[in-house]
Image (tube, rainbow, N blue to C red; front, side, top):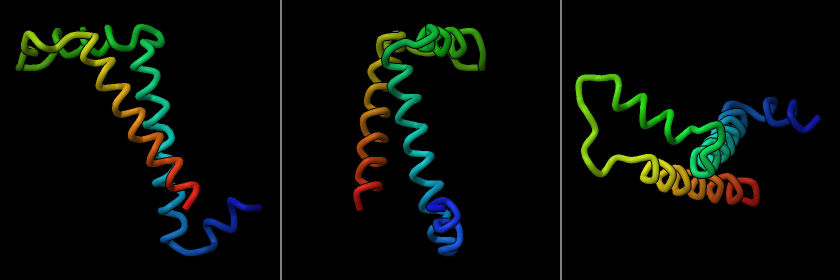
Amino acid sequence: MPGSMIFAAGPEGAMGFLYLAWKGILGILGFCIALNVRDAAYRIYEFFTGRGPFAPGPGFSPLVIRIVGALIGAVSTWSFVSGLTS
């Protein structure tokens, strides 16, 4: 029953658990974008180039999206693991 113990600890315990869960999910999503799972980088690129009032500049490409996804995934995963070990 560790899950019920976390929520019974008070609001700071529950919020800490949700914060760690969000960091883990963000890390997984960042790595999925970096690895181009289900063509994610191209779908994000097409979404931003085809919609919205502002067109992306010349430096915006699926490669840049993958690099940013890898950085977000690495930082979020590092934060998640350090939160688990502390």
